[in-house]
Length: 338
Image 1 (cartoon, one colour):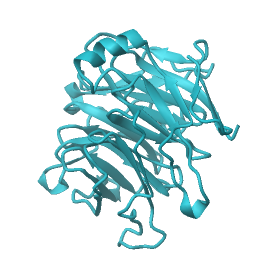
Image 2 (image 1 turned 180 degrees about the vertical axis):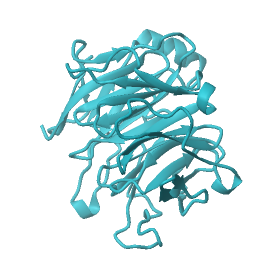
Image 3 (image 1 turned 60 degrees about the vertical axis):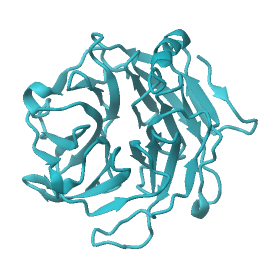
Image 4 (image 1 turned 45 degrees about the vertical axis):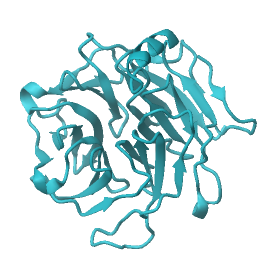
């Protein structure tokens, strides 16, 4: 499936979507709907969220650079009580690897893998849940780079992004009350969020109004936690080809913004423009990449306009992982600055 450039200017990113270069990982049965994906910090583990199975599967990268077809480990509802997991995020803190799982029931579960151990502990080390969290429909979660001392969670029903601070590393704990919240009229049924590697940019996928909002981190220490994001977005991407945006991710070097839409059969890439102090993301993408069978997409989408297309997305190094209930996971390679 060839890349489709939508502009005539030189594109600074290339995604190899040829059939022999794209790796596929298929669901094991029809009951497993792959909704979210995430890479470990070293890129050697891929977490895949099977929402209907209440399970997060973990795949190992093999010596040939591709991921194994079957998971080496998992966390699941049978042990952890996961309730419709939807998104994941990783971090390494003090020699312990953390896997954070967002659940639609308004709860965030945090799992630990201590140094030297192969598997994550089956029981959560900590959970962000309860009335004080303000969460009711927590669809996405991400550590805030570069220090990973905070978690950001988007709540679809509340139209808000909430920030939670780590208060202890031993035992591992986060505060249950948000230390800050981000609200804007552009945020509508937020379904996914992502940060640039430097933490300067925050993108929010607005499932309800078919847009993506991009916010900039404040240069001043406006809170006791030393960070906040400006309340007004620097860009609201209103590309008419976005249909129910589901997830977003930034590329590591050039901060291209990659967007999946559950109501389309492709993901799109938007290139930042302007000087560093006035960076914006235009409405028009520089690339759209078709990800699945058009016939299968049309069959599913005809029954539900919010389904059929790609959902979760994650980026590490030169890999883009995209998942869907229909075709599982596809892993692409890309180059920046070309």
